[in-house]
Each structure stands twice: as C-alpha cells, then as structure tokens.
Image: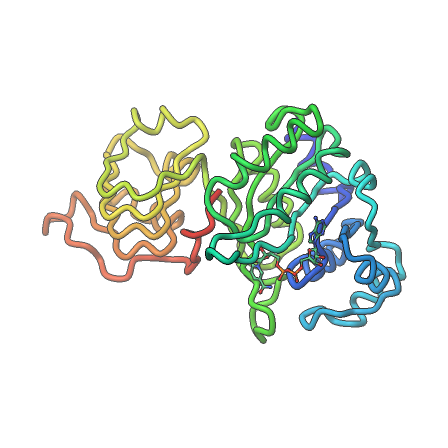
Length: 313
Ligand SMILES: NC(=O)c1ccc[n+]([C@@H]2O[C@H](COP(=O)([O-])OP(=O)(O)OC[C@H]3O[C@@H](n4cnc5c(N)ncnc54)[C@H](O)[C@@H]3O)[C@@H](O)[C@H]2O)c1
C-alpha cells in the first residue's frame, strides 16, 4: 500500500525532499533533486549556510551558481535550521559528516544527532536514507532505533529506511552527483524498491540495489532454490571467494533476488550467465558449471565497477 502510493508520488513529483547537512554532499544533492522537479528543503545546524542558500549564494565548487540561484528563486529549494519542517517532507537524505576520531574510528555523533532531530518530526509514509560514509550496521543498529523511539513509528510499516553511500568525488570533471552510479540498500524489499525509484527519478547514473541483507566474507557457498527461499527479501553476497549457483535457479531468481559484490568467482550454468553478469559488481570471473572444460573461469567477466563492498547497509 505504502509502496504503491510512494511510487505514484515519485512519478508525479509530489514528493517533498529534505536534505540534512548542506555540505559538499548535501548541497549538490539538494540542487539535483530540486532540478528534477522535487520541491526540496535543506536542513543544517549552521545558520550561515542556511542564509546563503536562501539568498541563492553558492558555496560549493560542484554546484553551478546559476542553478542554485534559479531553483531558490523559483521556490523549489529553501533551507532552514528548524527541524520541525521535517513534518513537511516525504524523503529525507542524511548527509552529515562522519570524520575519523583520534582512534581512527568514525565519529558518528553527527549522524546520531541529526537522526534524533529528524525522529521528532518524522511522519508516516516518509523515506529516510543515510548517505554519510559509515560502517556496516549503522543504519539498522543505530538509526532505526533512534527513528522508531523518537517518532513512535515502525520501520517498514510506517516509514522506510535505507542506506545509499555518497560516492561523489568533488572536483571530478566527468563524474558529478548527477551521473555517479548509486548503490541502494534498505530494510525490506518495498523500501529498497521505492528508495531506488527515488534516486532513478533524479540521477542519470545507474542505480543498483542490494536485495536483502548482505552476507559478508563467506569463503565458499552454494546458492540453490532452498537457500534463496530462506531469504524472502533476496540475498547480497559480498567478498566471497567461490559462489556456486545450482541449476534449479532461474534467471529471474538471479535478477530479482541476488547480487554479488567483490566476489572472486561465481560458477553457474550457462543459462544463468547473463543474469549473473547483470547483478555482479567487481566479480573477477564467472565460470560455467556445464562447460566441457569443467568450468574454467572466463577472464574479466565482472561488469559495473562499483566499490560497493565498503558501503552496504
Ligand atoms: N565530500 C566528499 O568528497 C564525500 C564523498 C563521499 C562521501 N562523503 C561523506 O558524506 C558525508 C558528508 O560529507 P560532506 O563532505 O558533505 O561534509 P560537510 O562537512 O561538507 O557537510 C556536512 C554538513 O552537515 C552539517 N551538519 C552537521 N551536523 C548536523 C546536524 N546534526 N544536523 C544538520 N546538519 C548537520 C554541517 O553543518 C555541514 O554543513 C560524510 O559522511 C562524508 O564522509 C563525502
């Protein structure tokens, strides 16, 4: 129900976007969302940045001055330090800093503080996405309880929560926010689909999503229908050396419910080869289990170059 309503609102540009943290990542993102037709509100704790945005003055190198001035003037982008306006948004991207502390650990106090601010005004039917760089588990173990406790809402039923690490490289002349491929992982299949749709509506870069909860570092594993059925939301394998796909899987099973990141070799029947290529990133090789040579790996079968491994949920 919530999924269909959100997909409809995305299609009709009825979603109001909130971007929390208007820095190198957040401001270009806010500008792209507004340019794509989504009314956007930027939130920041620095009043000076908020004032500059509202005056149409750009302070980030990757943002085109006239783009910012134009969308502010047309009313598509505004900024505030007042988080009570979170009640007016349907999508929240959290883009606050995560600097390393003295012990080389990410300081997630900004993420915690901003999630707490968002939680107080979170309304039913909102998507929340963390874009800050962080360690696996932050979304589910830190942000989800903060949002649920602060709002009294239930993740997956009342709001959707996901992670889409920002991968922008400020100053890069070719890849900007608009055309850098994105990876989306979210809690639940519907949330993943809706959040990926939201990015697809805005970006030219490809948007890849991770089905289900990622499994890290399984050295060897065989995936068959039985195993896949135990993961209703799908399965993302990260960093496996050898994955074998059984011949009871279909191409649709692979495309809809599996993803491979940074796996060394995926061995599959020939009939699944192109499906495996479509859902693989940084897979070194694909071997065919029914090939006459016994399945020697095909060199360089990996496809999209995404360094997603560090970034999943
Ligand atoms: N800049 C990059 O090249 C880059 C690339 C990829 C990923 N990232 C990641 O993206 C995240 C954001 O980085 P950035 O470079 O945009 O940081 P930044 O310092 O440029 O901007 C962060 C903004 O968040 C604001 N902020 C801090 N606490 C807040 C709070 N509680 N509520 C609202 N706003 C708050 C700050 O005032 C600042 O304006 C980090 O996790 C970073 O590691 C950055």
